[in-house]
Length: 73
Image 1 (cartoon, rainbow, N blue to C red):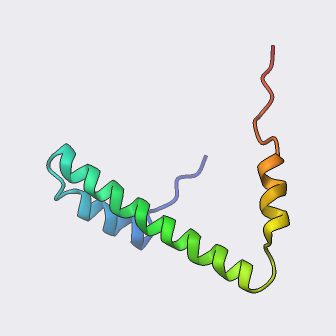
Image 2: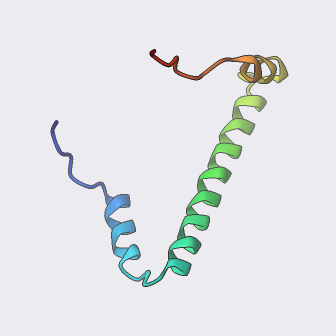
Image 3: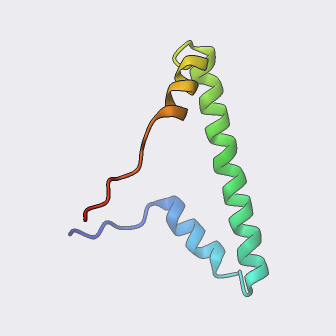
């Protein structure tokens, strides 16, 4: 497997993590990143909805979808 170099975002995050000296700081960073990505998902879903590419029927269908990988006996 070929190793890819870090992209600019990854490099910046690595530099930022060097300042996190304890578990509390790590948890704050996790919460911030989680909030950021949750907001991005929300905005993207709103856009899909506004463009008519997503609707309540698709919401209902995905709730009924079985997405687990079958276990091998």
